[in-house]
Length: 333
Image 1 (spheres, one colour):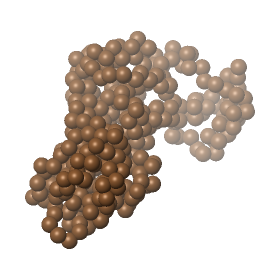
Image 2 (cartoon, rainbow, N blue to C red):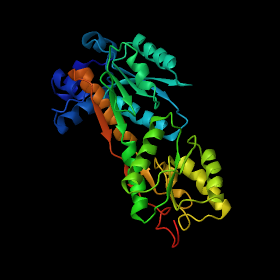
Image 3 (cartoon, helix red, strand yellow):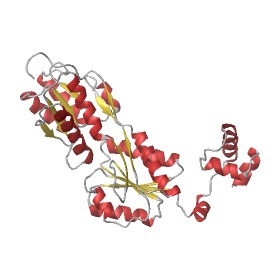
Image 4 (spheres, one colour):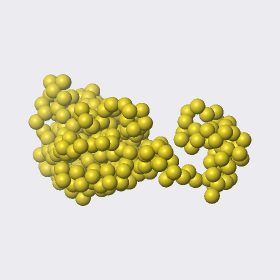
């Protein structure tokens, strides 16, 4: 197998320069980096991670604990974190929880510790997650993704409340005064935070916040709620907790002859790829999962490699305007 020194000879650089390129060090010119990468490709060089681990006392492995991967948000958060870890030169060991409990979280984290991981990203969007982590003696950096963290655990999250406020404030700016919310499960951090953002926006405008129905994130639950709302309409606009529930809601409204946005405006959350092709195309809140993954790894690497303390980072969401919202029709609302 070719050695690092062989790559250096072929590229005409020092072995320290090759090491800098392999470890993504910024102080390497583009031309030199290109020569080294060409030599690596030509020789088929592979880094000896076992030897490197003996020197650095690091496994170059990140443990990623995740749950609810059947849902769009958690699944894409996982992809964002995994890609960012690989881009930073770390292997990824993934554990998926079938059900969320303190015991299950503890067992998974202990499994990662047995693997000698350098850090752990926890993608379990439930209220008890931080409590479970606090009960453990953690000897490696841990980042709770979807949370601000606390004094023991770092956090990386999309500002869910801000996203909800963007959605509701858009509806208010169009003239809507009766705005309901189809919420996600309250034991999910994302669900409770989006509901709070909805309340904050309405209260800030002096509007009532008494029309809330809870779904389970699925299109089926959105459909069921949509049938109830179509039969007994009290709102001119609805903020729906995710795009999947909005899809079911739109189907129920279409079947009942409720026109969107003529009769009711609808805003979703997530901006999943299909949202632009709903009927009508869905106004929604976009989460940047790749950026969230990068922020998670940046926070973790500062702790692993620079000894930084616990911190938190927040990604700002974006409102995407499409055809499912419009000013309310004339009349009471």
